Length: 135
Figure 1 (cartoon, one colour):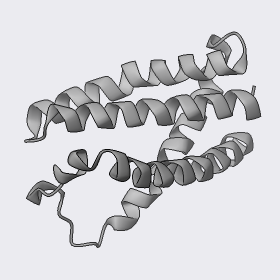
Figure 2 (cartoon, helix red, strand yellow):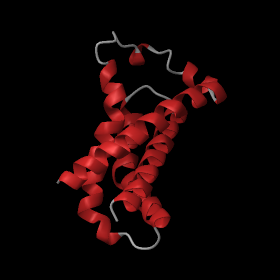
Figure 3 (cartoon, rainbow, N blue to C red):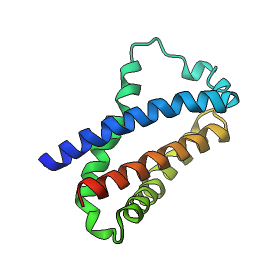
Figure 4 (tube, rainbow, N blue to C red):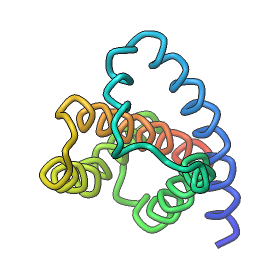
């Protein structure tokens, strides 16, 4: 369990930095996507903003446990293992969540696709890091 927590924390820090930096790059290169967030659905009073910033750690601890439990199923070099891990997570967890989100909320397909790609990127990066740090 200690290895899951330590690896989860390390990957969480890396995901936080990469995700936060990626947000700034995405706003710079895809500003039209972020105009869509000027919607009352996404306005917050600010009281829950910390939850947004903790996301990288929540996902990293969950994926760290998932990796520890199922890492024996992924074979090959660490890059391939990480890629397969991310794809499995995306198909099993992200796709159904994005489907229900799109079907139940007034959001655009572009937003949902961007969230899916973002989640897939996070999971692949986490998988590569887990395969490297915790083979």
